[in-house]
Image 1 (cartoon, rainbow, N blue to C red):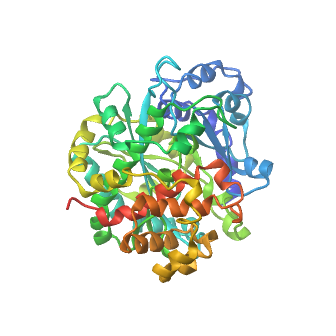
Image 2: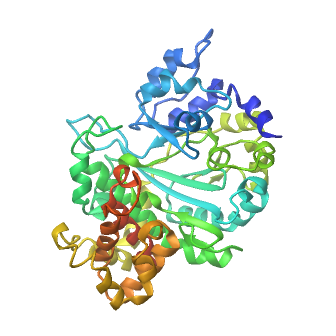
Image 3: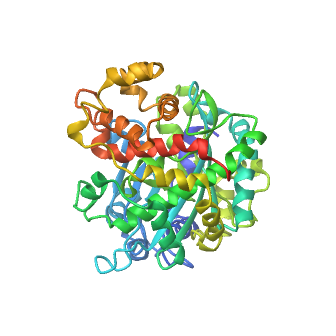
Length: 476
């Protein structure tokens, strides 16, 4: 099936009631069943859809696809929209229907009266990457998912053995493992303890309304999200060595190297209000509209839909090839979704086991060290973080990165080298992050609008956590 045929068959996808049932359940809506009213000519006129969607837990949605790229005149882009905006306009898009993602930021239980979020999302993404030829993920799905298979099973077995209930959702080049913790769970307070603190620059921004964000973010939301992602990082450390032993490809934290399997923890570089993730039962459009592709490649590859490969102990597709066939056979995909529930499982019971391991690990000590001090104040940077000559004289092997921070400090390979060289030279991990932040905030570096959207302090701290923590992986 080629792309035009795929788009034609996908048109009308969001008129499927089981598609909406899965989506609304995943968003935190109470939706045991769902029906569109008879006689509708536009989805935006469905009162049933409006009623349940506006009561879901997420703060906003992100919409991706052909139309958004055309409107913004930029490939690989999406648009964050309020749920009401989506229902009024974007829900009607066709040719193809849009990809929808939900915000990691979840609504508060009782607004300002109770600033606790309704739930905290735990999100773990594994994916194939190829930094030389990204079209391989489109052209050879069997080889890509065949290479992913031993890593997929390593993750699944670890989660099941720990008793962590979860969903495993297929994407275009990997899997999302998703679980949640309600704020009324005792585990919620543990997530706050693991998160421990929030960057001052982040809390300062989140205390006020901002562009695309019409309310403040409670510190409980941000700090519990940080704690959740730290546990996912710890989980990665428990898994990665066995995954490397089993995998035919290199398994890396982020997409280091030319080709391999990535444990993508980039959420650790972002705040909760700038993080979003895919929804099962929606089309996966990134591979077709992220980059300029050769017309023959784009034309001859269909669009996939996200399927629920597993829930907890239940494996829906023991054979990954069957899953690949169903993803682009939309009638079979609808049959699959009809037998599924989209609710994100409560992982509290199993997280007790993971937390017990975490608190006794070297990773917890690394996080305590990282949080023990703050970055140097701005007025000292000229003597510390921006004393490039002094830094390079003591660690000459990182000079090629220090003197050319853009784009080096956006590249995982360069960041990994710099962070570990500085740690070996005795730098405190928080000061390594401070150095990186100082370059991100240098007005003479052309970073575009990246650090207007994302907090530079959070971005720098996140990379030091992801890459510096590798020496603390495991239980020793």
